[in-house]
Length: 363
Image (tube, rainbow, N blue to C red; front, side, top):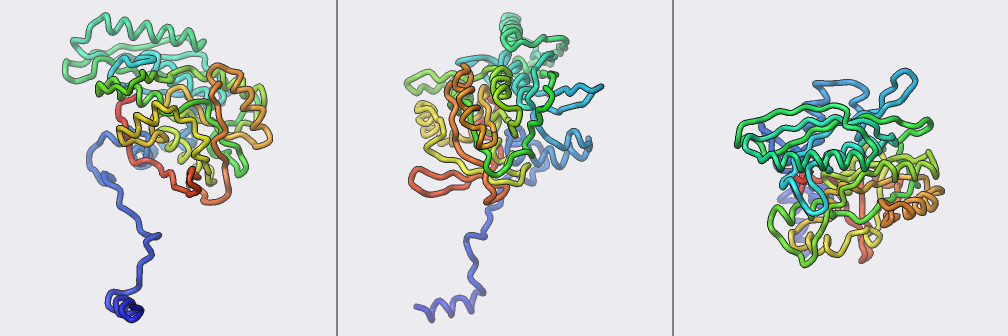
């Protein structure tokens, strides 16, 4: 057998180590926009890197954080913008209106800011019922009041029937960043504890269940909620929180990969510590999805110094939005730029950046 193997090597060349193989990702060379470009994964990153970043090219944008932190006259402002094209407009636990408010409020909070003002721009499709528009607008108002922000300005446009999906919303927001707070993905350090504020995967599965008319024996409601007050509670324990991120498009997996790559560190998760609700796990098993890539709209992931982890986690547990918080892993010097998961069976798997998104149009 050894002779045969030697002859095969001599005939075909040296043996290639499968560990070095790479699988070409589909859709990378598309000359047109595809749905994956909006999914928060590798295609989204490439769109930003090759189209938008070269077009705008400035150091503030280069940080690629959830919100930009701007210095104005001695005051630091967080500034963010986002668009919401969720389908359907209404789903268990929320609608496109409160989603738009909470999403922008949370992007500001991920810089440690206290959100203050929002703008809203509505793109309405000809033929949508005014009662629907009013219901969405009231949801925006109620969510803004609950988050403690003011909708200070806005705009409305109408597109022809068939050129929209009822209601699209674009929001922008500003907030104040407290002195001594420096939260950004580049600050992750080996030894940091990785915390998540509660059960994951609820929003994406809630939207998909309504969209596809699926029933899983129990209603799964979106987790959409404002997180600024939870962040303020965490900062009251220590201002030295290194990283905050709300794992929306692409889920927890995409957010952790972005942090690992920005900081040049590795992340190691413990599978058994991940707070995946049974109903989400069952639904994802039925749909063939990984809950780590499913979007959330009321959760955050935090990197905090190990010495502060217990106190921060206790403060999170005392807050309604952090009651289900968990320590899920740590930041490591090994495998820089990569996220791995220690499985319940004693193995390890790589949690890569998703190409696009498993569930499109969920935010």
